[in-house]
Length: 124
Image: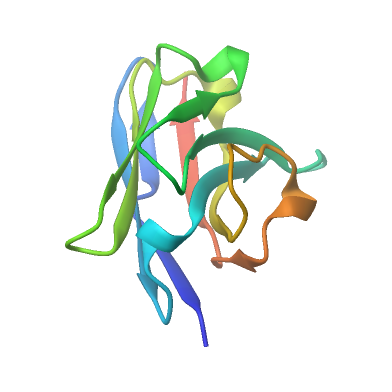
């Protein structure tokens, strides 16, 4: 059984930084494309970033490009999302997800496994 467990969320002031972690078990992060999504209250879940299965290529949603960095540590079977320059509109529950396919999937339906989410709150 695949489990994804996110951590690292919390309350941060506008302009601050956080690093989210996603620890995987039952499946290695190197065998999946690993993505981050987020969902704010009353809004749909939206794509944040993905690191590809086949190499370390990455893809970001435009509004996160330059502020967020996704990375993968295969030895620790963990994926990270480094967030800087945080804004109040970044407040959301952040989810880690795994997609077995190739490429850089950016749609939620492409992901088979999901974590429980970690709350990020950015105060103004």
